[in-house]
Amino acid sequence: MIPFVAVVSLRNQQSRTFRVWIPLFLIWLLLLPLGILLSPFIFIACLVCRVNPFRGVAVMWQILNALTDTKLEVEHRSAGMSFHIL
Amino acid sequence: MSEHRRQILQMLSEGKINANEAERLISAVEEPASARSADLGSAPTKSHPKYLRVVVDSEDDGGHDGPTKVNVRVPMQLLRAGVKLAALLPAQALRSANHAMQAQGIPIDLSQIKPENLEELVEHLSDLTVDVDQKDASTKVKVRVYCE
Image 1: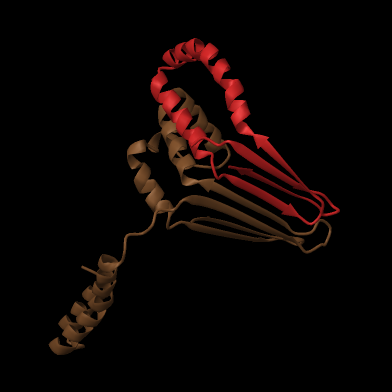
Image 2: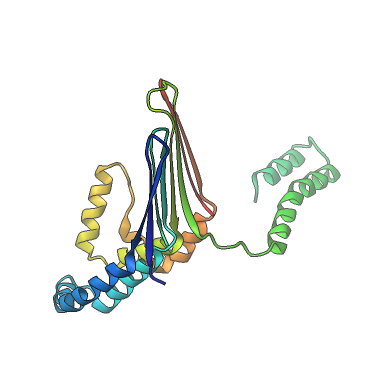
């Protein structure tokens, strides 16, 4: 399943934590018409680069799916940040 | 023939030990290996790792910045998809990437990573643990890469 939400947590020096939920599904919805519009150009670019466009799209879709559950945390005495794709 | 077995046979040929002693020694040497292989045979199949973890612990002894911890969790599926993407890249792009990595001191040939070897690669990664300890005058850095 493609990721729907990304959570970014930021902690400042006063130990206050700000959590931002980024609705990725809105980004996908916005990118979908753009992708459809650009698909002929992507198709031509794939042919020029001698890449199977269907396999390319399939792999990109797999990468998008695999992003779910990726987590990055950086903790420091004065600040901290975490990024989690759900 | 294993090194131990050869040594025992050599001792026998030199007359240092008799045939009975040689037999006992050989069975003693072979016992752990057979027990190990029996254990492997009866062991349940190893679960596939789901994530690749990179943990960096940096301790600042100087007390200026304080300790820093970095924790990265990457799904194995992303690794699989990445290998498939690398297989799609044109040969020229792979060559450029190889040159760039070699310039950075990473001698990896991306063209050798193929989707056919993917499962084998992931299987070997499950046994991977890389521990790097760096002790500097003011900082101690510990890097750990493993699968879980």
